Length: 508
Image (cartoon, rainbow, N blue to C red; front, side):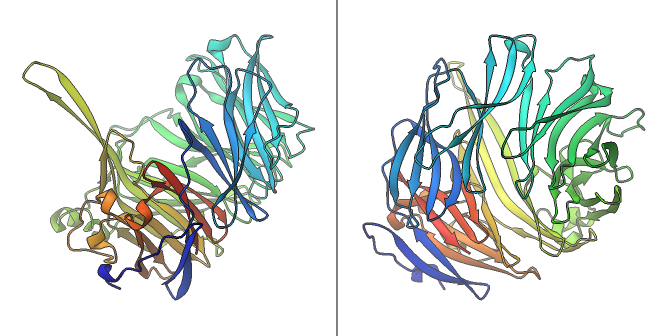
């Protein structure tokens, strides 16, 4: 289908829907109606579906000195039309919002507050589908030295939502022994078990990155720690996974270590068997470069690392980014960031990354006055299929060239989803490349004249690129970064329509 033959959609009052075919499967697209953007507000969280409605939390841009958080719960129907808006009102003041979560059909709001008693308190309230806030439930209370020495709370939920874990990370004290208090509970938030994990490192030698809780209540902490000894030109730091096994109350630590390679980015996930899957990039040094993708699997039954594998980028793959001469030398890539790891039914995973960087340009005029411009680059997408034994089945590059100035790139980057083991990537593309998977020349995206495209990969890595709709269609400019996978095969994105907005729904 050529660009000039793109389906022209007729504007209707309520919504527009049409069907496309991608990888032999019908993909339906629903453009919700154009809706008025409330003044000085932004979408805080796109929660997902409860029965036949879609729920969104909207926040108002309040003053830094405001004592209250102004929030609304918006309810949309399946045609993405706004049905009702309800205020979310908290009686308490000076709250620090942590997150909104949709768990087992109930909306929860997690927030913290510093109490005059010298405690930093972690609260939870249920939010009804009409925005009513339940009485706050105090989940964790931590004694602190004062407002300037507050601990940091982090929340994680197990894949089946049966386990809730709250980490209390103490304020940085350079010479203090590093520890973390973990609080385990469930969706009733009635019984809370405290587990203190003490590390054999000083705070200055320990960097807490992330953590996960599995369906068995095991806790897995990813941290970067200083090595006791290091060779010349070797990084001074390494990654470790610290695991607390709930049933036996044992504490283990595991090196994320692959010979002399430096792990430049690491991400944790939990598979359907409660094993930890760890993947990311590695390089020869401690720079921001990468020469390949690693895969590590921790079996939580045997408590041993079951798979440990590195995959260097081959010459063909590197040639997407550089000259043949440099590719033959195995030159590394730079400014590649992981967007997601998606665990597949067969135990493998889809690895999604993007070439992202910010370029700062300062100019001085003839009067000596300087102006600085920040250019946000969201370029090629890397997609890999990694088998459960850690080997790469296939990897490829989706070329794109997106850059904007001083705005953070609201229309750049990607949205993604999986259906029936097909991987889907959505982004705004230059209309001349809208259906060309590997163009001879990658053209910069002009967002107001762009086309929203869908790239679908099947399990063998075969890809198809499909134009969904042009930005001029209803003046709809999608914002892929603001998206939610509201169900196993449904992807909803925010879109700008002039000064207004609408939602775009894809049934994959």
